[in-house]
Image (cartoon, rainbow, N blue to C red):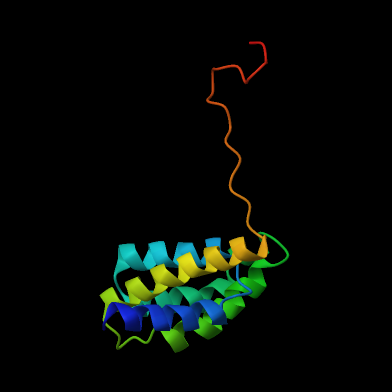
Length: 123
Protein backbone atom coordinates (compact mmCIF):
# COMPACT_ATOMS: atom_id res chain seq x y z
CA UNK A 1 0.00 0.00 0.00
CA UNK A 2 1.10 3.54 -0.65
CA UNK A 3 1.14 6.24 2.04
CA UNK A 4 -1.83 7.86 0.28
CA UNK A 5 -3.80 4.61 0.54
CA UNK A 6 -2.88 4.33 4.23
CA UNK A 7 -4.18 7.82 4.85
CA UNK A 8 -7.38 7.25 2.89
CA UNK A 9 -8.16 4.08 4.88
CA UNK A 10 -7.19 5.84 8.12
CA UNK A 11 -9.64 8.65 7.38
CA UNK A 12 -12.41 6.12 6.81
CA UNK A 13 -11.51 4.31 10.03
CA UNK A 14 -11.31 7.53 12.04
CA UNK A 15 -14.70 8.61 10.73
CA UNK A 16 -16.21 5.25 11.71
CA UNK A 17 -14.66 5.58 15.20
CA UNK A 18 -15.48 9.27 15.66
CA UNK A 19 -17.64 8.54 18.71
CA UNK A 20 -14.89 6.50 20.42
CA UNK A 21 -12.38 7.98 22.88
CA UNK A 22 -9.07 8.26 21.01
CA UNK A 23 -7.22 6.86 24.05
CA UNK A 24 -9.06 3.56 23.64
CA UNK A 25 -8.03 3.41 19.97
CA UNK A 26 -4.41 4.20 20.93
CA UNK A 27 -4.45 1.17 23.23
CA UNK A 28 -5.41 -1.00 20.26
CA UNK A 29 -2.61 0.58 18.23
CA UNK A 30 -0.07 -0.22 20.96
CA UNK A 31 -1.38 -3.78 21.17
CA UNK A 32 -1.06 -4.27 17.41
CA UNK A 33 2.47 -2.82 17.39
CA UNK A 34 3.53 -5.27 20.13
CA UNK A 35 1.69 -8.37 18.89
CA UNK A 36 2.05 -7.76 15.15
CA UNK A 37 -0.94 -10.05 14.48
CA UNK A 38 -4.20 -8.72 13.11
CA UNK A 39 -6.01 -11.90 14.21
CA UNK A 40 -4.95 -11.18 17.81
CA UNK A 41 -6.30 -7.64 17.48
CA UNK A 42 -9.63 -9.03 16.23
CA UNK A 43 -9.79 -11.43 19.20
CA UNK A 44 -9.12 -8.55 21.58
CA UNK A 45 -11.79 -6.23 20.16
CA UNK A 46 -14.28 -9.10 20.14
CA UNK A 47 -13.60 -9.83 23.84
CA UNK A 48 -13.54 -6.25 25.14
CA UNK A 49 -17.31 -5.52 25.16
CA UNK A 50 -17.89 -8.36 27.66
CA UNK A 51 -14.66 -8.00 29.64
CA UNK A 52 -14.48 -6.60 33.20
CA UNK A 53 -12.83 -3.48 31.74
CA UNK A 54 -16.16 -2.43 30.18
CA UNK A 55 -17.30 -1.06 33.54
CA UNK A 56 -14.57 1.59 33.90
CA UNK A 57 -16.93 4.40 32.96
CA UNK A 58 -20.44 4.83 31.67
CA UNK A 59 -19.19 5.08 28.08
CA UNK A 60 -16.49 2.42 27.92
CA UNK A 61 -18.77 -0.45 26.94
CA UNK A 62 -20.14 1.61 24.05
CA UNK A 63 -16.60 2.38 22.89
CA UNK A 64 -15.67 -1.29 23.02
CA UNK A 65 -18.81 -2.36 21.18
CA UNK A 66 -18.20 0.20 18.44
CA UNK A 67 -14.55 -0.87 18.05
CA UNK A 68 -15.64 -4.53 17.84
CA UNK A 69 -17.96 -3.61 14.96
CA UNK A 70 -15.58 -1.33 13.07
CA UNK A 71 -12.03 -2.70 13.43
CA UNK A 72 -12.56 -6.07 11.68
CA UNK A 73 -14.30 -4.32 8.80
CA UNK A 74 -11.45 -1.83 8.21
CA UNK A 75 -8.45 -3.99 9.15
CA UNK A 76 -8.89 -7.43 7.60
CA UNK A 77 -6.82 -10.40 8.71
CA UNK A 78 -5.50 -10.80 5.16
CA UNK A 79 -4.01 -7.29 5.24
CA UNK A 80 -0.27 -6.87 5.74
CA UNK A 81 0.33 -6.13 9.42
CA UNK A 82 2.63 -3.19 8.59
CA UNK A 83 -0.16 -1.60 6.55
CA UNK A 84 -2.61 -2.18 9.42
CA UNK A 85 -0.20 -0.52 11.87
CA UNK A 86 0.15 2.50 9.59
CA UNK A 87 -3.61 2.80 9.13
CA UNK A 88 -4.43 2.45 12.82
CA UNK A 89 -1.65 4.86 13.79
CA UNK A 90 -2.92 7.52 11.38
CA UNK A 91 -6.49 6.94 12.55
CA UNK A 92 -5.37 7.68 16.12
CA UNK A 93 -3.76 10.93 15.03
CA UNK A 94 -6.83 11.94 13.03
CA UNK A 95 -9.13 11.22 15.97
CA UNK A 96 -7.00 13.46 18.20
CA UNK A 97 -6.97 16.19 15.54
CA UNK A 98 -10.76 16.10 15.17
CA UNK A 99 -11.20 16.23 18.94
CA UNK A 100 -8.92 19.28 19.06
CA UNK A 101 -10.92 20.99 16.31
CA UNK A 102 -14.16 20.39 18.21
CA UNK A 103 -12.60 21.62 21.46
CA UNK A 104 -13.27 18.27 23.13
CA UNK A 105 -9.67 17.52 24.01
CA UNK A 106 -7.63 19.27 26.64
CA UNK A 107 -3.89 18.75 27.00
CA UNK A 108 -2.91 17.02 30.25
CA UNK A 109 -2.08 19.36 33.10
CA UNK A 110 1.55 19.22 34.13
CA UNK A 111 2.06 18.25 37.74
CA UNK A 112 5.00 19.64 39.70
CA UNK A 113 7.76 17.07 40.23
CA UNK A 114 7.52 15.15 43.49
CA UNK A 115 9.69 16.52 46.25
CA UNK A 116 9.71 20.08 44.90
CA UNK A 117 7.31 22.75 46.08
CA UNK A 118 4.88 24.13 43.53
CA UNK A 119 5.17 27.77 42.46
CA UNK A 120 4.52 30.02 45.39
CA UNK A 121 4.06 27.05 47.70
CA UNK A 122 5.98 26.10 50.80
CA UNK A 123 7.56 22.79 51.55
